[in-house]
Structures are given as C-alpha cells and as structure tokens.
Image (tube, rainbow, N blue to C red; front, top):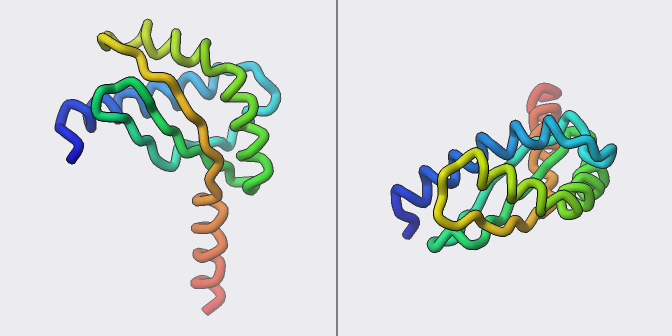
Length: 111
C-alpha cells in the first residue's frame, strides 16, 4: 500500500517531469506529450512513467526513445529541483491512453 509520502513525491515528480518535457530539445519528444500515470517504488529508487501522445502510439514510442536517451539529464534535473534523498531511475513506457479515450469520446458523440 503506497504511503502518503510516496504519493506526494510521485505528484511532485509528475509536475516537474511535465516541465522538463517541455524544455527538452530532442526532436523525438513532441509538444503533445503527456504523462498518463507514474508508479514510484516504495523506496523511491525506480519510477515507471507511462507516456501518451495525442498523435498515436507510434509517436509515443518515438518519444519514449528520446526520453530514454535523455534519462540521465532528466534524473539530474529532478535531483536539482526536488530535495530527495535518492533520485529515482526512470523507466519510460509508451501508452495509447489519450488516443484511446479520444476514440471513445468520438464514438459517444456519434451516438
């Protein structure tokens, strides 16, 4: 069961990651990228970040490649911005949550 501190750290990391994503200069990381969910381990050593793009799953997969190559920079930025004892290592996973929800919304509007 996640503790209050872990949930608070996860929200802080999510807020800072969205800001860092905007400042990345990698062309694979597009502007329409969002974090669907974030799973922080209990000890704070690992963080799974589920990333989705409005353009589709292929764009999200390309963005994950760019984010994986920039993982060291992202980890350093999180360490500088948040005063945590251990900065987690990030694992980025492509997710098609936004595109799937947009498709469901379109189907509901058609009804």
